[in-house]
Image 1 (cartoon, rainbow, N blue to C red):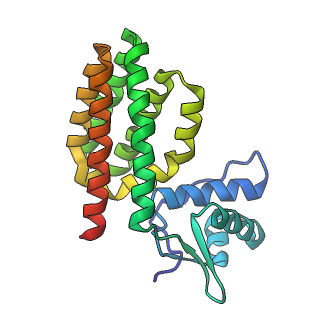
Image 2: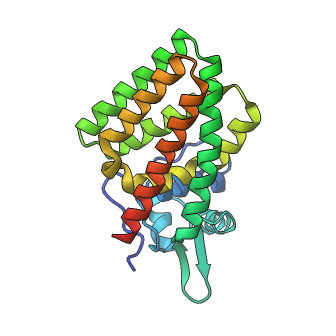
Image 3: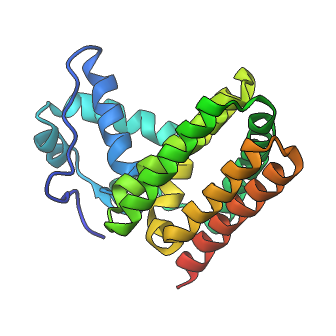
Length: 225
């Protein structure tokens, strides 16, 4: 297993407001969810502290918090490692995501107006441009924004809160298959937008279920290969 070495330019800048341990936690979480730190990678406190320009103490505290949340595994006498998700973990999370997103799509079809549909189409166009440029990081970020916008349009606060709890982990699973899903994912987004624009609740629900199922299958195919 490799140690903490990071890709050039991968280390985020720490925002100054707020407790240092929280800022270190957010920085490490971003590095994990974007897979700058890979599953199974050894996390050396001194190296992380050097990358982030902080002492080892806030790094240690952040790793303990990430361990509690299931992002990091702390192994006796070995240290900290980025968690390696099992097939069952991935399947359970992506199944829950399908339930949340399908209901969000249905509600979005109920509440959609011209302005919200135009905003979704703009995000879709940007996503297609990112795919064409083979800019995976931007495509992943835009995909997350697209689904978040749908969730906002749904207008259900509890649903949005539940979706927010799984959002980062969904990004974690989606990142390695983003290139594989490629333009097809955004074709599916366009079809979904058309159903929402027509206020077709049933079609929007079905299309979102199919869309999230395609991502789930792609993830399993990726891990098997």
